[in-house]
Length: 175
Image 1 (tube, helix red, strand yellow):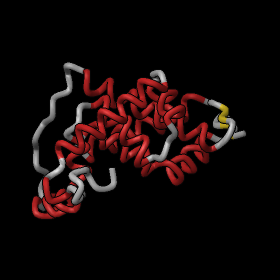
Image 2 (cartoon, one colour; image 1 turned 60 degrees about the horizontal axis):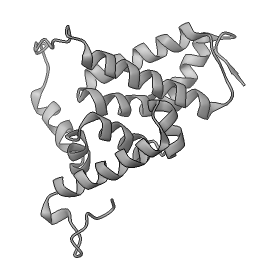
Image 3 (cartoon, one colour; image 1 turned 60 degrees about the vertical axis):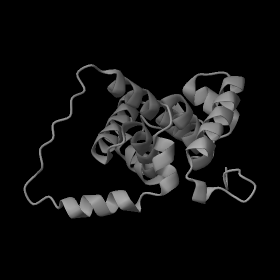
Image 4 (cartoon, one colour; image 1 turned 135 degrees about the horizontal axis):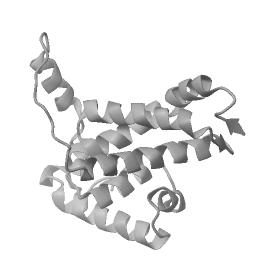
């Protein structure tokens, strides 16, 4: 049992160490901005402290954190007031930012172009290694719906992949 109320600051620190990268990757897959994704991570950790929840184990805690992150991302994307200010801070090196963007893999770029419903299911399945059942719980959908989203998402990815990334048999390699 993990009791957040017993020591909230330790619980947040532990959650950040164990699941921070997972939450950040999920948030980035929605927001497509590291800054916005980091804001989501902070909000998730605040919600963890406020929840005073008791989790059965680490996998239960991780599922809760990712569900909160997913919901926060969806809320932020839906918000009509979401307007990005484009102000470049003094001393900001655009070349460094471009280099970071180049380092993103081609497949992640293609995944990010998928509609959100496919993107979130594929991210949770392939990058967070959740089962179909767990994804259904996180996204509050039926397992059959998740299987369908994964199948259609893979089909869309296969059509989007550049020809050079396809195998000899015409199917996308690794998907």
